[in-house]
Structure formats: structure tokens, C-alpha cells
Length: 152
Image 1: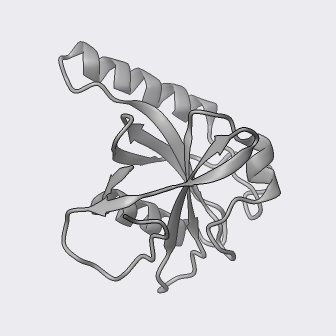
Image 2: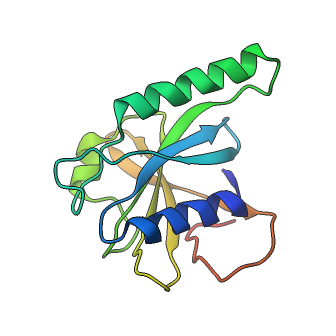
Image 3: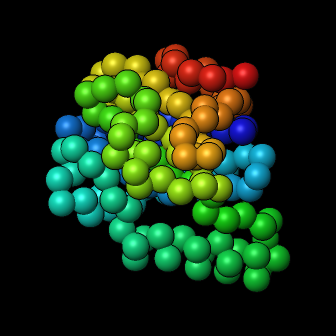
């Protein structure tokens, strides 16, 4: 999956801003590329330990994607979600697995301590378990390394 450096930078910056809470957002793109990371409200009862994307934000992004196509723009959809692990590695937790569903790309950023590099990893749910997705970070000025595990 191709991911522009600007998208990776936006996810990492959001994770740092929300620390120590988990950040979350939606991934807009197509089957080959993420074109945008849209921050959303974390409406989880315990945002220091979990994330839950606001349904209002999710529906708004679906509508925005449809309106873009209606205006003749490139077809994009909500293809996934991202969230941060403020104090741990970007690996799926048991809660992440419990709440995941197929056909969505899940990007995890972590740890998200202020001033430190943030590792970014992608996953898809396949046959009841997470499989890592290769993330190819493309374009933009070379910033500090973000340790995107699985970049190809």
C-alpha cells in the first residue's frame, strides 16, 4: 500500500498531539494508495487505553467521498482507520483484534511520546488474525525517520 510521506507525518503529528490519549482517524484512498488521513474524535469511554472513532465523523467522511465523485473527482473511499499506541509498539492489541473487521486497513502509530520518532505499521484482518501490510512511504521532503516497519 502506497502512503505519501505527508499522510505518515500527519498520523505521527496527531499521535504526538493527543499523547497520552490514543489518537484516531480515518484513511481515505483506494485499493493501492492512501491519499489522506483525517483526524477524528476519540469517543472511547477510556481514551487513555482505547479508541473509538466517532460515528458522526465516519459518516461525514463517507459523504465527503461520495460528493467528491459526484463533482467528477477521483473515486476514493474510507478504506481504513488509524490509531496510536501512546506507550507501546505499533502492534495490534487483543482489543484491536476484537474490534477489527475485514477489508479495512488498520494503521497503528506508536509509541507516541513527544519528541521521539513514531513507528507506523499497517495491518488487515485475514481469517481472524492480523496480517501486516507493506507500507511504501512515498514522496515529500525527507524528515526524521518514522521507522515505518514493513516499508517497501
